[in-house]
Image 1: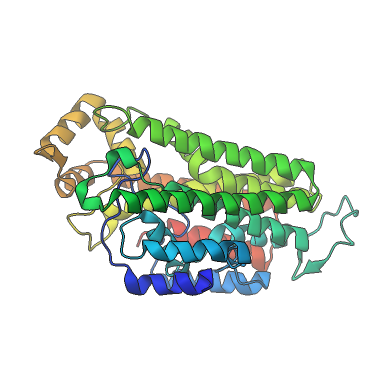
Image 2: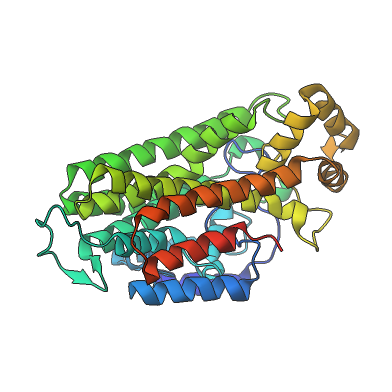
Length: 396
């Protein structure tokens, strides 16, 4: 059975049961990625992405599956079948690669392609004008978009590794979790190896350096999340919004920002154009992350059992306005028998200034992303990039 067929079968077997705690993560941590929905309706979001895909002439919803469908990984897929019926988070990740893509798609690669087409070929250096170009995009830039998606997918798979030391009896047999971890490590490493091979084939040392530094940023960002959430009696970080931005850029923004910059390097654009592409990717990623953090607080229908990250943007801003001591007091008041009543705490936060400030911050970064596009000539690709920003920053 191919991996794609296996992935497509997962939704039939998998329920909505909660996954075990992941390696070094707080149990209230909500995984955010570009697979997550924006505050816009799914119909509008699909329309924005569908129109963007037409512009670049390349469907990206299964961009990284070309590697996933290889003979090597199909052997792993046969082993993944043994996890069906368990509660290992690798199944949820695999299901999301296909099921969630129907509504949200893999946007990192798409943004790289749109940025490539919006900038076009360099007018200064004509050395790359003989390269293959389809729909205004060089083949090497399309390869870069696929590499970006491979790295992101590998990160999602690796992030689903279970912390065996934190397992509870309700999480299922230990042997299932151990086996799932082995498969997650193997498949994630396989994707990263393919990404590295693709980078080498680009034969551009600066692009390799950029993507390698993005990987380093990702590791540093995830390590910080793991180390803080693993602290004894961990509840929440005492950080300000500036520190939150720095940490969020490492774990959520570096890959997109540096991939956009690398796409400009492949087309031989100068440092100024590369910086504008970097700024767009950076601010779009931050805006999207804030949008994702806001969802538990702005959705009309939110289950009382829904948890949220206590270090998310609205909570960090709420803590800044309130002060550390009062914030800890509010958390203590929301605790019942050692567990936090997230419904009660959510209403407390909504009554403060954190949510509205987070919405303003999301729009601020959206505007900074739009400013970065001003140096690019008007085009369908530029309009598509602008529409993605509008979709991420709209809350009504």
